[in-house]
Structures are given as structure tokens and as C-alpha cells.
Image 1: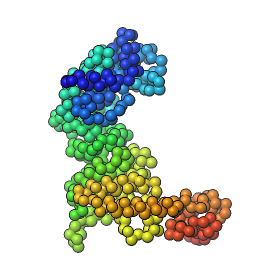
Image 2 (image 1 turned 120 degrees about the vertical axis):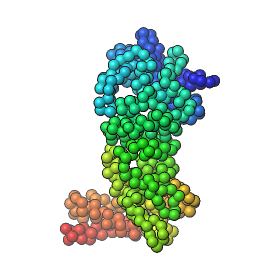
Image 3 (image 1 turned 90 degrees about the vertical axis):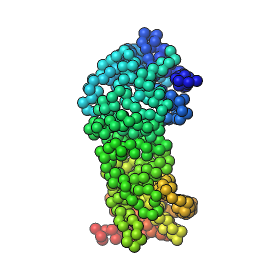
Image 4 (image 1 turned 120 degrees about the horizontal axis):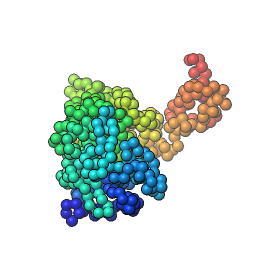
Length: 472
């Protein structure tokens, strides 16, 4: 097979029966319909060069039609008017959602996000002309078994090229998010920016400044699915997006490290990012783990090298407001900041068992698995032999597993007494003093695991509570 034959065959074979049935229903009612969107693009990419695109299996099949939204509502039993003002409804079939959008053109984008108004058209080519990139401006007619590709999107896919539809400056001015989508596609689809498209990014950044933090955060998270998300962040850096979104990251560009690293801080962060497993939260932690290094960098006359004392603490303090600004959830922010704060593991075999337990207590058991993965990515991203560091990490993991196997108390939840016990048996009133007493008990149990016995803990709680009251 050559040309468009292989993609057509792949689309025919992959098309879910309900989607074909919907197209037949449109034709029987006197309308035309086409399959559009990411499924078409990704399946074409697979057939053209054997890659998997953004996902080997996609279920988000979208349909474009010349039927008006109210006509679509009459054709199908369960239709949700999700974006009916812009011509989009969602058809539910067997609990699966299919987005159906009427062919449309668009007017100006005053807010840099949505068209001020839309108008319906009857020509699929006119509809495709409003799309962002040529690779997304390809439609499949499953009833005539042919691709509609007026802007040579298949040719661009085959050439691994990301090119805007028509005038790139106009496309980017219409929706400020498109420049960030360009960066994401460079990573997730492993494409290269076409020159004119690349040149249009920086002059269009005023439109990008209008994009909400939530939309930017969502693009970041989608980017983290790529094999090498660093490709997207390089585009963001080179074309001005990071300066707007996360200028703190630019401080690491050209920031020289010590003799244990082959890259500057930026290059190391990119390598760490790519080395992290494909967990979006973990990869954001990899991106930010050394963000504090430029602000803690000092030259040591003694070693004639650079030091970065407490860069993990400073980095955590920088990461928290960054993540808040980008509207990460509280749970995501807490986890990422925790990983940045504790990513530097300085384990030595001379640690006592109590020292191991104190370390687990400090970093929290909930972070352990991600912390191990982040540390592996971190040391592997130095650009030098990491075998010794990785072996040291394995020794720490074995020590931690041994303590957990012993049933050692590592959090207040592991204590043989609870806050309710302190209120009932010690007479404490609800309030922060209960937490302080429990933490005090935990510190003692970490040092001496045999002290985790109910009667002894209650007796010790009496003493700690009295000390708390005398302090107050």
C-alpha cells in the first residue's frame, strides 16, 4: 500500500461500529458526516511510520457533520448539548460519548480562546481550514472510504513536521493555547516545528498571555505522556512561553553544576524529566526537583567546585507557589513539593535502624515509592556513571523494607494509642496539643520500637501533656 491507502485501511478496521452506524444514520437522513480529530491523526501516523502517536488506543472518536445541532438532537435518542452554542453536542451510545460538531467557520477571537461567534458551513474543507495544524485538519469519510486532506496533513505526518493551517500567526492569535499545543505535539508525536510556524510563536505570545492557568496545567500534564517530554519544554524555553508561565525555570539555563554532573542545571532537569516513569505528577517533580539550585549556588575555594546547600528546601519553597499559580490541585501540589523537598537522598550504611526510621518518618511513607523513582531518574541524569548511587539506593530500600517488615511505627497512625485515647484516658481537650503529644510519642517510639505499647504510651502521654500545659 502507498499514499493514503494504508491509513484508510487502518481507519476502516479501527472504526467502532457505533461510529459507522451514526454516519449511516446521517446519510439516511440526508446529511453528510466525517470522522475527525486525534483518532484520525494518530492512526494515520501509525500507518505512515509505525509510531503510536499520543496513544496506541483511542476512544475519543469525533464526528463532523453538515447537520445542524437541533437536527442531530432529533436523530439520536440520548444527546447532551455540551457546547451547542458552538455547534457541538455529545451523542451517548451504550454509555460511550461521541462528540458531534456541525461544520462551522469562526469569526474573531477577542479573548484569545473562543471565537466571538461561529457560523455554520456545508463544506468540510471550510471546516478543516479553521483547525490549528495540518495534521489535525484531516477527515475520514467512512462511507466513501476516503480521506479529505486539503492542507497536506498526511504529507506533514510522513515528514514528521508540525505546520499550522494557513497563516500560523492568525492561527496562534485566534487561540493562545495553540502555541503550547505545538510544544506538546513536538514531544508527544515526536515532530519538528516547520520554520514559518516556529517563527510565528514569539510574535503571538500576547494571545498566549490570555490563556488560563488551568488550560496551561492541562497541557503540561498531557505533555508528560510523551517518551521525551523535554522536547516540549525546550520549545517552551526557546520560544518565550516559559518566560511567561514559569520564569523560575529559566534561571537554571546555563547554571553550571559541580564535577559530579555533565550538564548544566537545565540540561540535567530535562534528562531527569525524561528518565522519570510516565506518571504526570512524578515527572513534574522531576522537572522542578533542582529549581532551587541557581539560588543556592556558591563556589567553594576549598574544593574549587560549586555547592548547592539546601537547594532541595529552597526548591520546595519555589515549587509551591509555582504549582499554585498553575492551578495544580492541593493533593498534586503537596505531593510534588514533598518530592522536591526530599529528592536528595544522602544514605550511608553507618545509619542506625533508628536513623532509617527517622528518615522514613521525615519523608513520609506515602512518598517512598515515588521518591525512589525520582532519585533513580535524578542520579541517572547526571550524565556520568550512576551505578554506585543506584547501588546505594538499593541498600537503603532494603533497610527500609526490613523496618517495615518488623512492623515499626513510622507514622502516628502506627501508634498503639490514638487521639481519642488521649482525650479519654489522659483528659486532653480537642486541639493542636493532641497532635503535638502524638508526634512526641512517635519520636520516642522511632528511637525505641518496644515503647509502642498502650499502657506505656498513655503514661508517657501524661508527662508530655503536662509539659505542653506548662509551656502554654
